[in-house]
Image 1 (cartoon, rainbow over the protein chains, first blue to last red):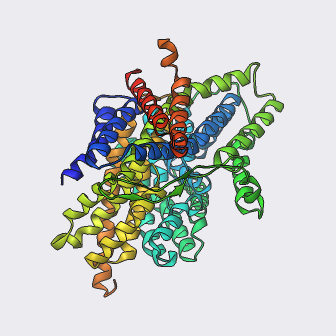
Image 2: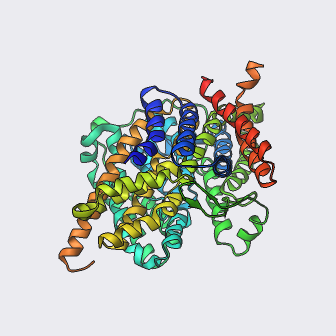
Image 3: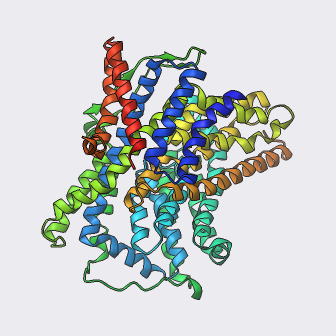
Length: 524
Length: 52
C-alpha cells in the first residue's frame, strides 16, 4: 500500500500545482520530475543509470511530439495570416446557426476525423484555434477537441495503439475487435455528449439528442463494421468521414433552438472562397493518403531516421526494463514533416493568391516562437517523469494497488477498474499506445486469474487508454499553445480531468454491463 | 547572465541536449561525465521551476 501511495505522489504533485496553485504545466512538471526522481531512487531502487536512460527516452519521445507541434503551429499561423481560419469558421457557422451543434461538429466529429488521419495531438492543434476564432472561450476551445477526439484514438491513426495491444498480449486482433468497438462506440456517444455538456449542461444535450445519436451512432457502427471486417487500421478514418457526411446531412434538416443561435460575427475585409481556405487541410489529407497508401512512398520517406538504442536496465528491487530502441523519427516521413510540406505548399499558394501583406514570414515565425517555446519547455519534464515512473515500476505499483482493491470477492467488479488503469497509463505516459504496452499483459493476467473474459478486459483497457489520452499533459500543452493559454494550462486540465474521470467510470460500468449480459446469455 | 539562464530557447535546448549527451557519455563508459551532465539537467529543471 505504501508503494501505491508513493507512486501516486508525483501525480498528486502535478495535479495540485496545476489546479490548486495555478502553476503552468512546465513549472509543475519540473517540480513533479524532482519528486518522481527522488521516490524512484530512494524507494523503488532506481539507479542513476536508469534515470539517465529514462530521461533520454523521454527526450526522444518529446522530440517526436515537438516535431508535430512546431509544424502544426507554422501551418496554423500561415493559414490564419491568410484569413483561411476565419473563412472556415464562417463556413461552419453558415452550415448551421446552432452554436452547440457547431461545437459538436468541430470539437467532436472533425477532431475524430483528424485523429483518423493524423493523431499525435494534431486534432487539438488544428481544432482549438478554429473554435477560438468562432468565439468559443479558450478553455472550451481546447477542452472540446481533447474530449471529442479521445474515443477515436484506438482505431485512429492507422490503429497503431490497437496493433501495440495485439503485439504485447499475443491475442489475435479478431478476438479483441468485437468488445473494443462496442465499448468505443458507446464511449463515442459519451464523448459527444460531454462536448455538448461543456457548452451548456444537460439542457444542451437534451435539445440536440437527435443529431448526437445520429452522428455518434453512424460513426460507432461504421467503426464496428470496419474493425470486425479485419480492416481496423481504417476504423477511425472511415468513422470520421462517415461522421462528417452525416453532420452535413443532419444540418440540412436541423432548426436551431432560439436560445442557442450563434451570434453573427461582423464581416471583415478578407473574402476567400471556402475551397481556397480549406487548401491547407485538403493538401494535408492528400499528403497523408499518399504517404500511407502509395506503395513505396512510406519506405522512401522513412529512409532517413533518427533513433537511439537503449540497453537493458533494472532497479535494485528487480524491476527490469528490456533493451529497446527509441521511437524512431523519420525525418522526411514523420507526421510533422507532412505538416511542414503542407505549410510550405499552403504558404506558396496563399502568397501567389495575394493573401499576405509584407513581412509575413517574420510575423508567422514570431507567432510560432511565442506559442511553441512555452510548450517545448514543459514537454521534457512531463514526459520524462512519466517514463521514469514506468521504468522504476511506479506506474505498475499504481495499477497493482488499484487492482488489489478488486481482488477476491470483488473480482466481478474488475471491469469497472480496468478502463481506469488504461486511462491512468495514457495520462502518465501521454500515449494510448504506451498504456497498452505497459498494462496489456497485466490486464490479461488479472482477467485470467479472476476468471473474467480476457477479450472484454483488454477491450476495457484499450478503451480506457483511448479515453485517457484526453488527460495527457503533452496534449494539453499542445492545445493551450495554439489559443494563447501557454503557462495557464490548469483550468483546461481541471475541465478535462473531471470529464475524463466521469467518461472512464461510465466506460467501466458499460464493460460491467456487457459482462453481466454475456454471462446471462451463457457466454464468456 | 540571469536573462540568458531564463531564456526559453536556452531552457528548451538545454533540456533536450543534456539528457541525450548524458546518455551518450554513459554508453561510452564515461560515468563521471554522464553524472555531471545529469546534474546540469537537474539544474535546468530547477531553473524551469523558478522561472515564472
